[in-house]
Length: 207
Image (tube, rainbow, N blue to C red; front, side):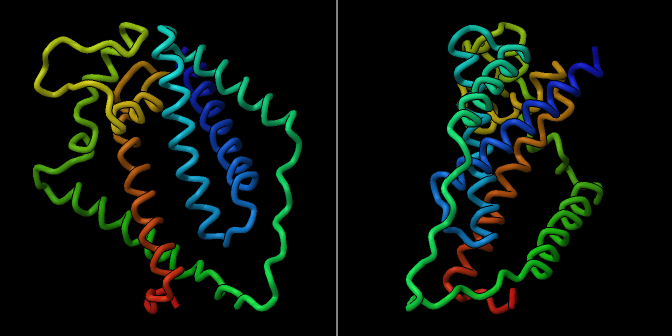
């Protein structure tokens, strides 16, 4: 059973990432590599939110239902054909500078190492601090729908963090991976900041 939950999780995540990549090219064909990665990441989070809300509001909040929803999405996207190729922009427009992948990778690596250092420093902050103990998602999994949990000071009605945590909890039925949801939003924030600074030409430290 545990092996099946891992297969479902890998499958649904792979499908969501594939859909996000295809939709980013279909909706915004002319993007720099960094902007493409940011758009794909945002669309991945959006696809996870929408698919979970569809299952939950239909009263079918199960790993099987989520797999069906993702499968329908993949089939529908496949039938649309390949996204339109990017169109060359006016030659008079200045070409954007090459994306500084080594510097970006360094920033990401330093951020991850710093986060691990804070968590392991013996302070009260830890990975579970980011997951709100997953009270609301755990209740939704038990009920099979997005109903209001009994009064609990740790829970409240669906918010972004809880719905996103559900993506990592539903296939396994446990809250061990709930904190990964917060890492998605942290990654989006870091990516937005880096891409925005690069686009404005203000990130000299990325040069």
